[in-house]
Amino acid sequence: MIYLDNAATTKMFEGALGQYKKFACDLFYNPSAFYREGRAVRAELDDARKSLLKRLGAKEGTVIFTGGATESNNLAIMGSRRNGKWEYVFSNGEHPSVYNVAKELERQGAVVHFVPLMADGQIDYQKLEEVINERTRLVSVMHVSNETGAVNDIKLVKKIISKKSKALLHVDGVQAFNKLVFNLSELGADFYTISAHKFHGPKGVGALYVRDLKTLKSIVFGGGQEGDLRSGTENVAGIMAMKWANENIDVKLNFEKAEKLEKRMTEILKKDENFKIVESASPYIMSVSYRGVNGETLARALQDQGVLVSTGSACSTKKAGNRILESMGMRKEDVVSSIRISFNAYMTAKEIEEAGEKILKCAKAIKNLEL
Ligand code: PMP
Image 1 (cartoon, rainbow, N blue to C red):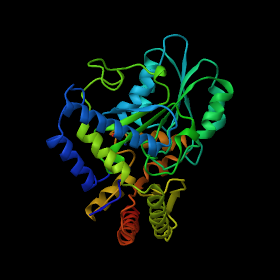
Image 2: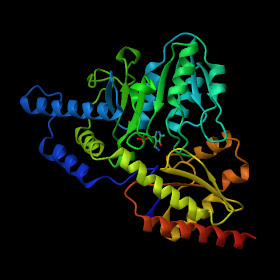
Image 3: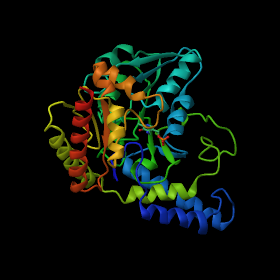
């Protein structure tokens, strides 16, 4: 089986599993306990925090451990909102764990703006500038699109915001962290979301970077863990496994490997001119469509051939992908023909070769059937 759905989730590193077991079965103590064993686990958690901050390249601020990116996104948005006539700005390309929080804010009576995307999948920076004003409380723009691999220019987003407001900037960095080389202190984000299972860590664990703790309030109430911002005993084993994954990825080297995989896949698919490929800056994610062939039909046929790809976002049964591709101005027939191919850096050239040829063959066969 060739797995080309790494944007949905990745296989956990064996080394991360080793850490998981160590902190689940041996050093299993509650990090809030007063005795020495508990304090030792607390110190390990603080090291994990430092490890993430280092990889992020943050000069100030901290990270709060959460139960994954969906929770981090909810915390950043719902936790930074304030009463009064504040406005909130989101890109149309956001993952449902941001987009549906925005919809909920709107339902609760807040003024919410959705900014369209450009044809290449990035946020329309000009339109962004038009909606920002001194009442803007929060702007949320993802770093890398999970649908297309488009990379937003976060530095530019920050610049646009700062010209007209003091608004906070939240960035969903799930598809960027440990994939792109970047420095958070240069991006200017106030909040940054990460998720362990997208970089070979366990599912159900993530973090939210917070530049200034005063800008955030808790959305769950309880024992006051994580600086009173995320109550509940920390998922120590998951966090330590995430730390291991974080420290065992060579981001630059992996990026170069992913570039080679994407380049080869592109070459193979381009042998058939019916394939349309959305050019994007992240080599990990490709959105492609085959004229006249339904994406779901193609993905199912590929599954039978042992190649796993996705149509739209795997995280959403309601096919968020369509909302995003349509916002880029893609024609309806191309939207329904789209599949998403996503790599990890540990794949072999041979796997790409085999999968690419199968994608070509399946698409052609379905087209001939449908003619
Ligand atoms: N944001 C983006 C961009 C994602 O791709 C995903 C996962 N598909 C999430 C948020 C949600 O992550 P989690 O599964 O950790 O809740």
